[in-house]
Length: 289
Image (cartoon, rainbow, N blue to C red):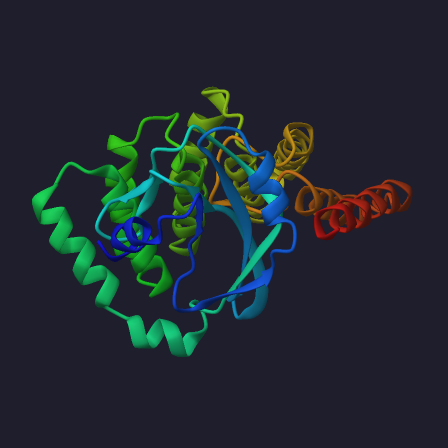
């Protein structure tokens, strides 16, 4: 694997990992961070990507481990995961830009990742993580039926505590909604809520689903709006999830506050809408500081 060969050749105490479609936005504090980090502690970066969602161009940010201590390696044939570190934390101001989701880049890579993943799946047919990644590839290509099928197979084999399980649930709900399979999405969401999920990534998506249900089921709109509000308030209570990475930035902070502000404004409660909007602004400022 190219990444492991590069890590072995580096010989440094820490290695910063970048892909060909990425660049450093800020990193002025990582030397000081590395000097005080605990033994075998990995550093995470904010990775920001321009992407399209329902026809709108938006920037999304996730938190990923990118600063690896000596002795760490990557596992997996594609969408590799770092291994061998003792723990991780956000590494000072480390931020990375990524344009791999721009349409021209997606088109150029179309089929390459999927082919590699399917080759690996033929060797490891019971690997739920490979199913999850294949589902992501189909979702990027907007092949919703195939994405839903792969996500369903991934859910069968994914342990609830797996670090990518919340993202799997969030993506599953989104794809099922795109397919108009709302009853199935609601059933999955209810299963997650009964399990006592404590992942803001999943709860944020469940809140979005509840809002859609309020529109499509007006006779029970009050129930669904209340449940959406509870989900987003729980996201705020949980905060940004520092136990997992590859999580969408803001689901435990400013995105939840934004949704609550919109909900209050729609209900005509201007005082509550203002309160949530002010909280959103403060949380965004804190994230970008």
